[in-house]
Image 1 (spheres, rainbow, N blue to C red):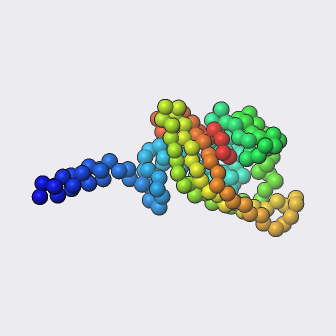
Image 2 (image 1 turned 180 degrees about the vertical axis):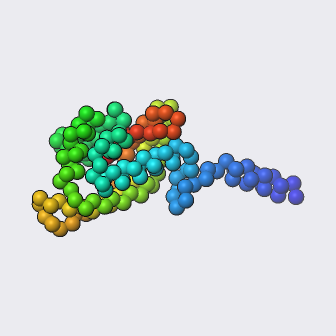
Image 3 (image 1 turned 30 degrees about the vertical axis):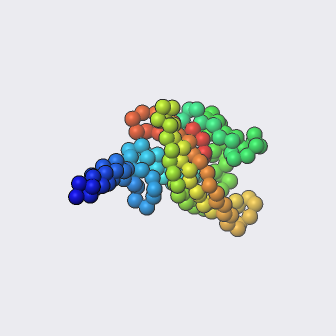
Length: 157
């Protein structure tokens, strides 16, 4: 009986330490993960609306992104966002973006986080073709904490 009580107590203690998960994910349900997911949803909506102003407002002033390639022409930094993003978005029509966040990792000491996600985008490039284009891949978006539960994007747009 003593042994059973010890096992029950150990299981109860372990389950009380377990984090709640955001429904439908394996992501811990915390104020910070919810804040990051909210930024990512605002990002998704802004891309679909081709709203460069909102996208810039989500970026931290240390923002840098290599565009996923070695080509420096697709690189962005914070000062480029106000000019290059509107130009890039203007080339697209009928954008649909689906984002599925797989995990969020934190570096508490540095006050940064990295969200690994998959995306699927469909869009039209009317100057090239009327046929809808599609792309998808696994990406990472990085964030910097700016105050208690507010995060800004540092890369991964």
